[in-house]
Amino acid sequence: MENRMQGFIRISKYAGMRNDLAQAGGGNTSVKLDDRVMLVKSSGFQLADVSEDSGYTKIDYRMIVDYFQENVRADRQSVPAEADAFTEDTGKKLLQEAQIEGGRASIETFLHAITGKYTLHSHPALVNILTARAGGMDVLHTLFPEAVLVPYRKPGAALAKAYYKRYCGQQAQGADGSVIFLENHGLVVSGDSADQVIGCTEEILQKIADYLQLPYEACPNATKLWDAFAEIPGLKDKIVYLSENSFLSRNGLAQAVLKEEKWNQAFCPDCIVYGSKRPLFLADDFSAADLTAFIKKNGIPAMICFRGYFYILAESVKKAQEIENVMSFAAQVQAANLSHEMNYLSEGQQDELLNWDAEKFRRQL
Image (cartoon, rainbow, N blue to C red; front, side, top):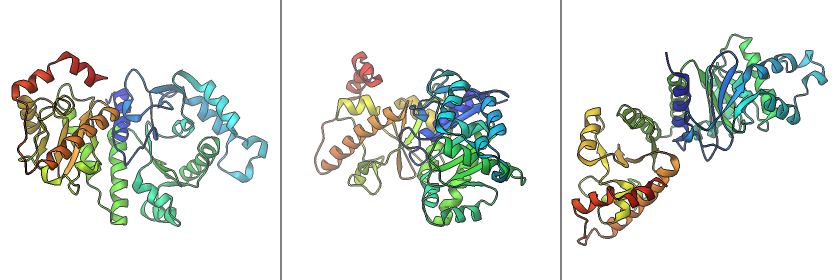
């Protein structure tokens, strides 16, 4: 049986490490621990930073469900106006009463209260191309006829009410409500397991990419690498972040050095401290043995090249972006010196830096 906390952390890191799914502090995740208690990502936290000890709020979601069932009906015609008055103030009070412990509850907690065991609300670029396009919701209905489509409402009470009515209306017609598209907003996917939620999200994005005739490979590959590294002891809490830096691009100015036989970052202390000794270049059909062999010889890589894209292996998005910044610097220096001999640090000097307590401390900040 899947550990629900670990499943909650998994869907949080999955969405949080990918810029195509969650930007800044956007997006939410939740898991229902039983028939009353739910964990939902706290407002102000990055999804990728959710852990067993922080980043979530514990909610009595049954209190929210009961309120909606009693006061917000799916059939608009049969409900007196005073019985359907779910306002921002009402919502704020309900959230306060339902909160058991933890940080500030997200205004989208209402949405999570009525969905499945695991829920991921993300803001995928591919989805929002259509939710923000005139006629785009009609396209989504054609592509995903079983999905719930919710017209735009301001996030909070207005969206929660519209969401609940559409959700209940579609359930009454036999749909399970596991996929919801929010106009001008994003995607909600729920399921009985973390992998089911992730798999469904990927299927949706691939189908939309095919419809739009847009490339969709680099981002799913981050998840593929993440799953592979998670099998290695001590690395399951890492994330894999796709670099979009122009100097770390196969089409960028430094593309000449973004090759295994050309790249050598051992010319500067920061490049060693933040980027380890060298990047890991993987074949399309890499195996777990390739990862462990590299780590045994070179240590844990900070940067990975896979199918022409560069990815950063790190503890958080913030750390990944710091490493990306240093590796961009490394690419620029190497590119400018292609026709010149460079001075490199010896293996001994590199090992000295990697084992120096002062640099270890700075790297961890």
